[in-house]
Length: 143
Image (cartoon, rainbow, N blue to C red; front, side):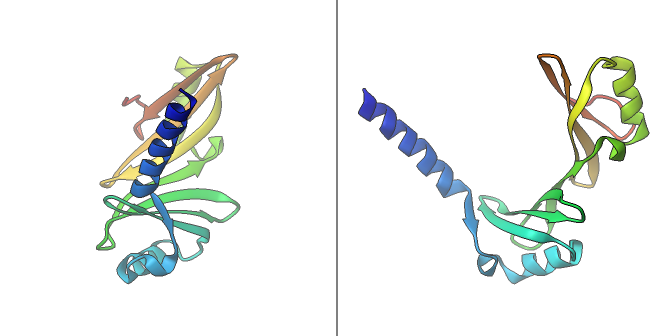
């Protein structure tokens, strides 16, 4: 039985490695690197990963502000995720949280941009309860 469990774990993690592999920047197409450098000229701690639909890059910018950005092989930006502080959330979202989740505190927040649409993922906590709410820019829940 132990061998079957170990084999299963090996197969699962081996499969994940095939679909998401860390790669050196030299292995990323120059059109993607050039677009990334144009989009984020002050990026630091850059790590690239090859995905089935292109490339994902994790990096920091500014005062340890984390970003994740997905690019197609032709250099087109597909999606970006930016970590936010509570104070960086739109006032409409803060108002909605204060109204509908007044006992909760914000544990984590992200700004997600995909196909020119912006949404916000907010993780809320109250005692042992955790909620993940997606908001549009007007402060309305969308998921």
